[in-house]
Each structure stands twice: as C-alpha cells, then as structure tokens.
Image 1 (cartoon, rainbow, N blue to C red):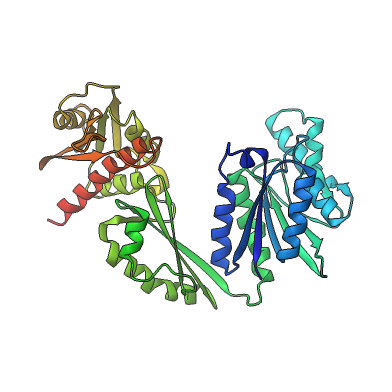
Image 2 (cartoon, rainbow, N blue to C red):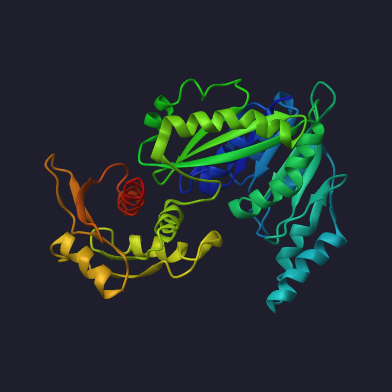
Length: 399
C-alpha cells in the first residue's frame, strides 16, 4: 500500500503559506511503513479539487488531505469528495450538535455558515475534532479500474490535524496494514550542529529500509532524530531501538541534549537546577528572545519553577558583555549570569554577537556569528547563547 497527499488552499498554491502539513504526514506515514508517491497542492476550486481527487484515486489506495473544511464558501473539500464519489452531502445531526456545543461553551451564537461543517458525503465516516469546529471526513472513493480508495480529510490547522491523526487516523491506518505490528517512536533532540553535519556523524543510520528507521528533521536550529521500530509488542520495539539510541548518543555526545518535546531551554534550566543553581540574563543583540525562551521554559515539563530569575533587554548599548553577565547575576541573585551583547561586524563581514557567562568559577566569552535565514538568525543566536550555559555546566560537573 502506498499513499498520496493533497493540500488544499489558495494560500498554498499562491506561495503565501508553506505546506508543512504534508511534510509532517509524509514522515508519519514513513514510520508506519507506508510510502508516499505524490504530493499535490490545489487551489480552492471545485474543478481543480475533483481532478486532483480522481487522479489520486487512480494512483493510490490511500489519500490523505488537509485543508478546506472550514465554514466559508471557499472551503470546498467536503463538496469535492462528494462529487468525486458521486454521492450527495447529508447533514449529520450528531456532528452539528458537537459544533454547536463548542459555541455554547464559548458563550457565542453559532453563525449559520458553521452548519456546513456538519455536512458529510453520504456513506462517509466522521473524524472527531476535539480541538476545533471542523470535523474530518473518512470516505471511500471509487477507483477507475475497480475497488475503492480510502480518503482521510483533516483540517489545515496543524494543531488540530495532529491531534486527529493520533486519535483516529493513525489507528485506522494501522488496522489497514497487512501485519498488525506495534510501532513505537522515540525522538532524540540535538543542538549545536547543522542537519547535514549531524547526519555525517552517524554511521549509516539514516537510510531507507533500516530497522529501526531513523529520520532527521530540522526546525529553528534544533535537529530531531526520530527512531521508529516495528515489533511484536512494546518490549520488542524498545529492544530494537536501544542499540540505535546508544549509537546516536555515543556519536553525538553533548550535541544530544534531550528527548521527545524537550527544547534546548528546558535542558539548560534542568542542568542549572541539577547543580542547585539559578540563572539570570541580559541581552541586546537577541532582542529579548533569550528571556522569552527561558521564561516560558521555567517550571515547564515537570522542572522546578524559579530557576530562571529574570533578565533585562536593551535595544543597544549593553556595554562590556562579561560585565553585563556579572551584573545580571548580581541583580537577580542568581548563581549564573548570561549576557548577549550588541550586534557587531564579525571578521568575515557578517554580523555577530558576543556571549558571556558568569558564575562562581569566573567567566567566559564566546563569539556567535549569525548564519542562515535572516528571520531565524536571532532565534538561533538566542538558542546558541542558552546552550553555552548547558555546556558550561556540563564541563564544570565533569571536573
């Protein structure tokens, strides 16, 4: 069995928005052992939608769709599926009650247009949406040479789509697979090197057909290695994954900072708290991103609250960066001070900032040269500065 993905929306075909949903679903399907052969993006028109669905049904037994399930006139996915299947749309009273209840909980009247979200192609099945007003559609489309193609249509909002995938679509897909194996995943989070550099450090781990499968993705300078194993049960999967995780950690060392949903700021605060310490910051060149990341992580994911004591942000003129780190530490009564200085020119002509750390052992200053996309460079710089604290703590804890 192989799959095809369809993303629907004028904002996608016009380039106003990037289709991240298809990328995410393709990776999830890969974990399940279902190869994706085509990605299709279509505008919000009946003609384009019907053509895309009929072509997909001719090529694949499984089609996953995102977008076009909203309440407005240009949300046509339900209409397209009904037309491609040759059946009418019918109102689901249970779906309508669910949509209405969401507006009741908000204390708002439901617009008449939202009734559209309770319309389903005859014979289709409802995919519940616990996060929004747009339920999904599970339908069967006729294939040109006989048989049917199964279609799962989900909202375009990523947070809603992912919840619905986990709760309903993934179990349905597992039931469709010829072998009902258990599938487990584990994510290893890394920071401090690029995607290609990390892949080069791993000995033949990231290749098609490997068991367990290892995938690699990058987001805002954080690299995620996902290990996925198929086995008889959870214990079998865990036994398969363990040697691969051990190899990853051995090869990457301190580049691997956490697992699952850990962010670098979570790892830093955990490292500081593990030494009985606290952290404060001062920054200029990262425009408050250091303080924002640390404040959001403080007390998150079961970590103790109050490890991050606070920080100051100035647009420019932070001054001597080591002195600023010392001052942040003193002002907030923290054991560790972190400072990011003003943006300046690096030796190669690019932009750079100096990062300083101050603690009981003294201080250290490092240069960070901005790289990558301009809109991501400040966030990458902030994460790099935060990560230097983690590396400093690890170094000191090892003697």
